[in-house]
Length: 335
Ligand SMILES: NC(=O)C1=CN([C@@H]2O[C@H](COP(=O)(O)OP(=O)(O)OC[C@H]3O[C@@H](n4cnc5c(N)ncnc54)[C@H](OP(=O)(O)O)[C@@H]3O)[C@@H](O)[C@H]2O)C=CC1
Ligand SMILES: CC(=O)N[C@@H](CCC(=O)OP(=O)(O)O)C(=O)O
Image (tube, rainbow, N blue to C red; front, side, top):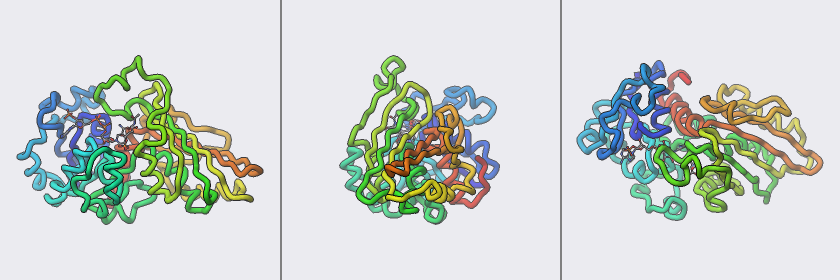
């Protein structure tokens, strides 16, 4: 059994990940942590999430210096379901203890530290680590993930977008000089568990945010090696992301070319193509680890529309982290 602890376990992604690890036949969930001063320290996780009663019995422990120092003897891997800067500060300490670190935040997704000052609002505290991290988009980075001790689990919108776009890029089906246009809507759990005025029920409607400046635009561009225009939206539902992506394809592109590009997912149980004419819905992916894709081509005008749907807390975070853990420790799926 591989022993795993979760830090940030009372949050939305941490709680999902705790459940998935607990149910995995080859992982043992050892500890759940919150901050040293957390109002939830000492409470069983299942008190915060009663759907976990009988599944996860562990309490939320305060992560003080002593708990941190002991982790090296108590566990093999640690998952960070934390704010980006806190993750970036903790990761070097955990790696120094010999632990394998799976970071669900954006704290290690860029080799170039200047992205953190430009898009995240902080100077990265451990820039020397950034080139050692494997990007955790499971279907595309298995080789690097299997060899890394620091895995930067892919972002939620980037997962939806890249799952749709990478097969096209790989097949040369994105016109040179064009920028795919990604319009994506996320449910409110994407903003985390902490209450703010922007995620309060009566405030949420359907609106874009982060226009021409969201931190996921450079993440998508880096991993796609192609410029895009990305516009996120917040919608009045709990969980899920639906991305509608418009792509300019080269002259002469046929439906058979698109089919061939997406055949890379033929053996995937997670990323699945819907039959032509059937579009994914949020309800089809909420509470599942799947990414559902569907597309339509206007061959005459060279325009392709691809729709991609995921659960932001699962394929966009926790179940993707579990996929990465499966790859890193060479164990069976357990999803
Ligand atoms: N929500 C989503 O859809 C997605 C989120 N992510 C990323 O995953 C990370 C977690 O997100 P999410 O679950 O939504 O966040 P939440 O705000 O829901 O949870 C954050 C967790 O971190 C804990 N925490 C805060 N400070 C510390 C600390 N110093 N030490 C230990 N624990 C701490 C909080 O508990 P307490 O404050 O009580 O200590 C809580 O358990 C973020 O980086 C986010 O960007 C990635 C993909 C999707
Ligand atoms: C609806 C909402 O607020 N979504 C979050 C994205 C989710 C997230 O946590 O981003 P990472 O994947 O980079 O960690 C946002 O736009 O900041």
